[in-house]
Image 1 (cartoon, helix red, strand yellow):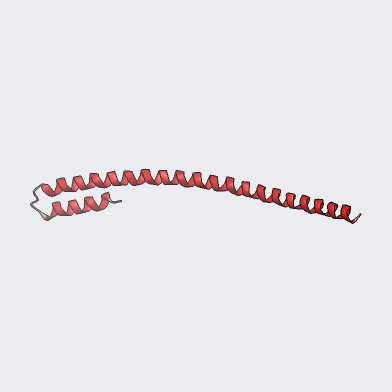
Image 2 (cartoon, rainbow, N blue to C red; image 1 turned 120 degrees about the horizontal axis):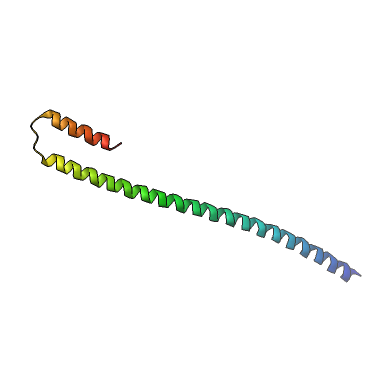
Length: 93
């Protein structure tokens, strides 16, 4: 009789443990799905930032070329220098 009672108690403990493990597995799956979603968002953000960075580098290269062209041109007055400075300042924004 004691053996049978012990066996029943063991089955109950095992069933309880299985239920706990099922609950933990469900939580782990939910966390995995959320992390995967966050990872996808992060990757999309990285790609957008990479494209923006490339665009800004190209814009900067263009501005450098324009500056080089303007500096090569002979200047005979301060107004021209002021215009160049103003143009460069505005091109940054």
